[in-house]
Amino acid sequence: MSNKKDQPQDTKPVPISVAQETLVLGREPSLLLPWENSKVDLDSPEIWSDKIAASDAPAGLMGTAHMHRKYQPMIGFWWMYMNMGPDYFQGSSALNLTGLEAIRYAGKPIAMGDVTMFMEQYMPMLMMGLTDNLTFMAMFPIWNKQMDMVGLPMGGYMTHGMGGGMGMGGGMSGMGGLPLQPMSPGNRMSMQAVGLGDVNFQWIYKLLDFHRHRLQMNIGFSVPTGSIDETMPDMAGHRVYPYDMQLGLGVPAFIGALTYLGQSEDRHLGWGVQGYTTVPVGRNSQGYAWGNSFLGNGWISYNFTDWASLNFSGIGSYQGGIHGANPINELSIRTAPFIAMPDIVAAWTGGEWAGAALGINMRMPGFAREGLEKGGVTPESAFQGNFLTAQIVKPVYQSWNGIQYGMNWMFNVSWQWWY
Image (cartoon, rainbow, N blue to C red):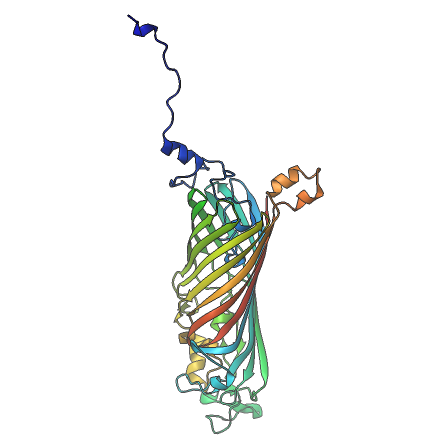
């Protein structure tokens, strides 16, 4: 009889389960913790790659959809140019300056209309991976807004018969004896606002990272560093505050976003969806508050090589109207025999638009750290870690509350350096 004690014992370790093995390879979803680092190799073919051109979202998202590895810093610079006009919109219906002449608010004609307007934003940015699952971001927007206006026949030049008489010094005077600046129809004037906007800080938390899919959440806030005191004199002697020419909200705001990213197995295709919202907190010192805003983006990217990709986006934007009003604007509207310009009417703010965009991303392979380590080998390695993106946006639908100057097109370009 054989003795069981004499039989050799199996000393091999018990194999891990299939579920555990696939989790290690990054094929199964598992909720990640922000204070931890990735339990899988971030260069694994099973994980969404952050080393190819399509790994970043289109330029218009301004860095809000990508993350960094632990202690990996990034500096970046974004430039946005938005060209407005050439038409005004009443709801979703376009109208030119001739149509604007017939518009009345509280029974009063409009004195001036826009002929050109643009908004530029220059934005330095800093990012740092606190862990593999949590990235910190700081954005410092600098605005340049310019508006050129023309006098309209009904409101731009007031005759004696329209509530006005001769004032002191031979000038015109309007209701309540307020001085009027004679501005003949067709005469032009400009205004410009330049300065720091609302600085914002965000934390990007990677919720899931599995089988070339990623889910991220942004949470943050903006600081009211942008001026809301940009002024110009209207033709009734008031210092009016056009709402769209201000540089900030005047109050703090909560920021939130949710982003889904995906890549094909061969890394040639990438795609993503992001919803981004800003929620101002309370009314500012001028007595008004902007409504909540929401920006939705969906895109698909095609990698020609690891360093170049094209992307096509569909974009939808909603901006809530203003609650309350600037008291100086309301004084001008109430006492002057005309409305200085559509931009001072609080009821004529907010709206929505949808558009299509085409962009390109170019990225030198690897990160700068790798390039610097190889700097003595090939001069080309010094370009590693540099990332360029560009995007042009064209609205296909827009609908605005009241009467507002429409959007024509927008261009975004960025440079980033990942160390």
